[in-house]
Length: 94
Image 1: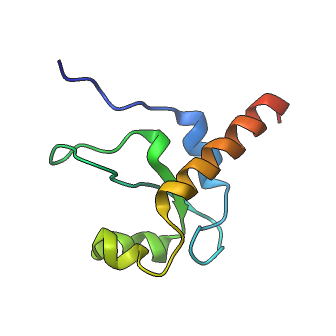
Image 2: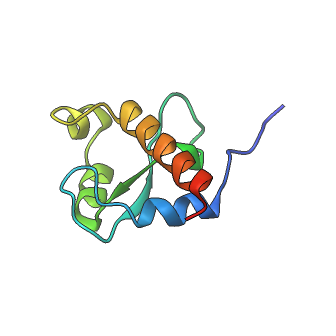
């Protein structure tokens, strides 16, 4: 059985308000980071999203996963940090 990736428009809107995880610039775009296997043309779930500015997002799309993240904090940890911060934000009702 094939399941569709999780989608959450409110989470993506919140991600876009966060500074880029690489250069800290705003505005950001929601970058869906592919972690693990996925089909060609299949976007990762929204929970695998990180904020990247236009230039960093473009750079990520033009380089491989290992090359882009080589000198940066582990994207899996950054995803967990952003999800945690969003849950705290959501609980406060901001």
